[in-house]
Image 1 (cartoon, rainbow, N blue to C red):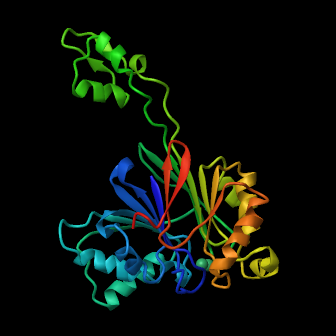
Image 2 (image 1 turned 180 degrees about the vertical axis):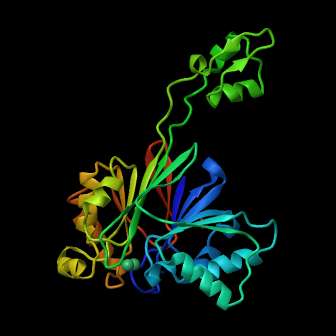
Image 3 (image 1 turned 30 degrees about the horizontal axis):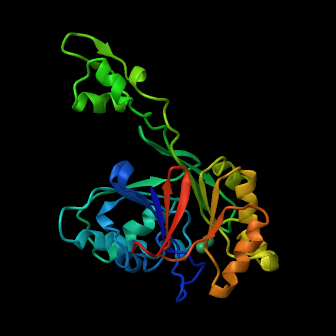
Length: 319
Ligand SMILES: [Zn+2]
Ligand SMILES: [Zn+2]
């Protein structure tokens, strides 16, 4: 799993930061990626990465502010015009009103898509579940309805003890794969070999909380409970905390408080105001670290890989 930030600014684009969008790359887990928010020019940002829009399986929208959705019609439309194989169907999750806006815009501009969009109007609770993942949404506290998401990977099959399996007479080949994925198998002589007898305990999947715009609130803490990674907005800093409250946003310290109270492992600060220049980032980080130690400040195109329980900052190296 990898997280790549496509836009990390707040409200308006700046030269350093585009408006909100974040890719959750699940290439190993399901061969697709999920996109969270789609600010203006997200498709331009994608052009600077290895991301293929047809690989986007799900698109989650936190709220209907322009800096989170103005890139949607363009991206949806371009996804139709790309060469190669036909794009897969897309599921678009968003607050009430999103479907109406998209349908109206596509109709008005005579945009015909060559793939179906399945709209899901978000309400609090589980919004997606299959055998590998579960996604839960909760409403946060912003100036308009805004959601946060908790993405949980279900436990993974434990390690396969190959020697043990071979000892029990399993031939090399597909039966080993079945045992590894949790299935019991039958040998030619009728013997049943149980998966649990030749595999270790299930491994814990990852948990990522991706939160939309919000003031500090308990819902953020609940969504982030024991998460491996929390992506939280930090539009303001400690000195401008009063403005954060007035405009329905958080400070870097609020975000750190959420990560700490939730007992999370890592925090990535996102949705950074253009008032902060590159030289101010050190201070943003320092203030947050006083409350919660493992913090990063997202930059456009920065990538973070989740590997063996550690979050690795790949920076802009793998564009
Ligand atoms: Zn915003
Ligand atoms: Zn907003």
